[in-house]
Image (cartoon, rainbow, N blue to C red; front, top):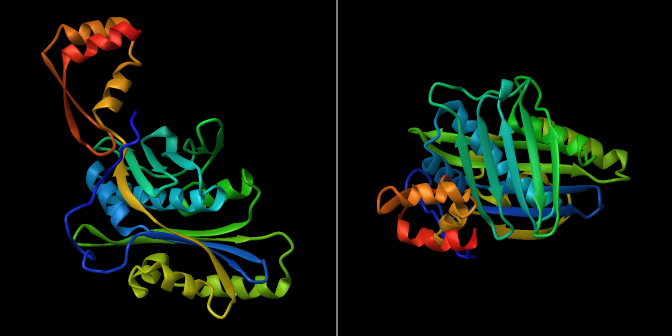
Amino acid sequence: MSGATKDQEPDAGIGEASPTRDRVVRALTDDDTFRVMVAVTSRTVRGAIEAQRARGETARHFADLLTGAVLVRETMAPQYRVQAVLKGARGRGTLVADAHPDGLTRGLVQVSDDERLTLGAGGSLLMMRGGANRMYRSVTEPPDGGSVAEALMVYLQTSEQIISVTAVGATTRDDSIEHAGGYLVQLLPGAARGPLMVMTERLAAMPPIGELLASVGGDADALLAELLYLMPHTKLGDSDVRHGCLCDVNAVLASLGTLPREEIVELMKGDEVLELSCDYCRTEYAIPTTRLEGLLARS
């Protein structure tokens, strides 16, 4: 695969006139008590949902998983790629979120048209993070009937041993994503009782994440200010997030190269041109079968 990327910018729609951009911001309270991440992912989520043609409750879970993957990446290892794979209750349906260090984020929806993805028994959340030489994998079971945010908190508590409060969500208007985003607050070791009580009360008084995102106009700085009101803090990171894809014709050929030799030979007996599409962004590629000859030479 080449290093090229394709940014997928949806047509201007609800909220597109806003000057705010998709961002993830990381901050630390000056008393070293809390680490806070906020993310605004409206355009990113809108692009991924449109690319995958997700609808209804599946789209809502998909939006939350995309934002959650961005927050976990920023929390655990901003320089690494994070992939989140959510399987629905009884193993029915799969959602994938793929968040890269440069902010590129994409996803997959693998749910049949007649299915409704729900969380619970028989489902799982697989989190993978790492670079080229090492990959960390952890699987947890989402709470029955719970949310993606609750599944992420279970993962952080059981696999990373980090007490966290997470909220992710999205609002819609006319069947289009208007605002999407969330926050993640982590309690650091040695936290004093006073600040802990202040933050606990603050989070308890917070409106639902959709209302909160709408109230701040989808602005990451305003969201951070709401969370840390009157709490001195230092911003540690501020980076863009965007929907995009890594596919190109060379990546498509590389994926074909993983097929057994006999399958490649069979493909070459068919039409003169193979019509393939990227699962992530739906870009269509026309591959002349003559280009498969080089794959046979390497297999």
